[in-house]
Length: 124
Image 1: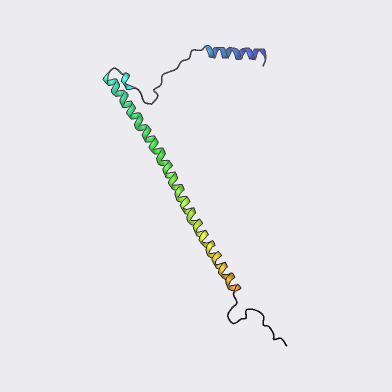
Image 2: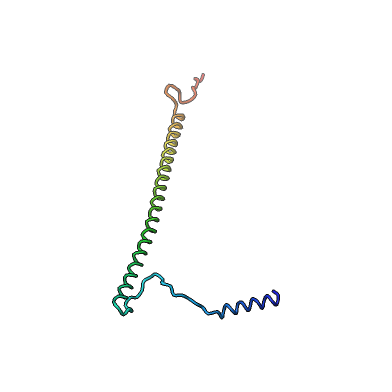
């Protein structure tokens, strides 16, 4: 940085630091302690504000949880369909394996009417 740029930056920084901080009060929604209020009207208003806040919070949480439940139900249904498809695949493979074993047994057994081994000629 050049000397002038550094000087300008430091002056701007100093002005920002010395500037009065003006903060406006905001009504932040939340639970308030209503017992500190002196008049009945203010206590009633405070309590009503707490009730409104709690009802809004419950409504938001209820909607969020319902959305999560719906997503979980959809996921469960998808998983059920996958299990059914996998079970069918397993059943098909087991049936094919059983058929292959039966075919091997049929090939290994001699068919009726055939000798079990080569015929031996008589010895002279």
